[in-house]
Image (tube, rainbow over the protein chains, first blue to last red):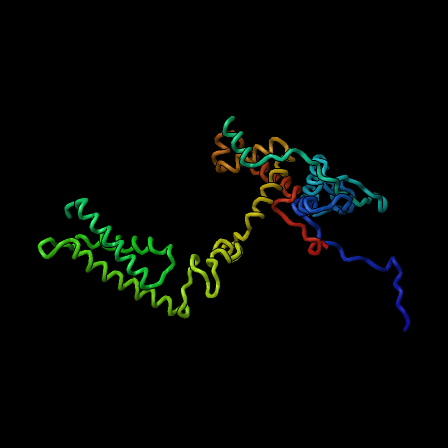
Length: 118
Length: 197
């Protein structure tokens, strides 16, 4: 039987469903160190800026919230943020999960007791 | 208004109710824990019917006997009807099931309980694990987010606004950020890889 070989360029993967900031944070919550997620493809600086973005307004807000969440996660030392150039003015933005920082646990009951005492 | 009952009469009522409860308990072959409930049911019914007591027609002991006898009959009829509906066996958490020695309550898992029917199916071990994870997540949160957690755990939104002077919109913005912070630490949202693909 003759095998049909499809040239790599002919194959276009289905466009993944765009996800929200809370879904991105949930991914961080469940990710193991080294797991990676492409959270945006394009030019983030332009795509999130109101006047120059070519995205529809709802989409622009979604990407903006997603980028803010990614930056927040980066500042909390939960992810590395990396971008890979995929073409002219086009990048794949990746989040790579880091080992979770371990601070001293604070029981909620103790937190409330100390707040009431203060 | 009915005259207050004397201590001697009250003692008589309590004694008669206890005797009737023991008799009924023995006849119905109920678990030991049920005797207190029976005594209480009988005594309450007796006290409710005290306004109908007429001392010219007999002693309070005689009156109590008649009332307790009637109420015992009603309880027995109700009990037999219930037992017939259950196929002739006693269904009680305190009674052992047929052929066993342990009370049924000891054999049921926490997921079989009433709380589980209402969605609270976490066991004590799950609760302990949740508290442990929450303590770690709270330890990782920034100080201001931790303060907001405490405020939300103890006050209503309106109280927080009046106490701190923050505007409602600013507070909701902080809560939205707190939601993200908690989700990053594994609380409140789930990532569905299949759905995202």
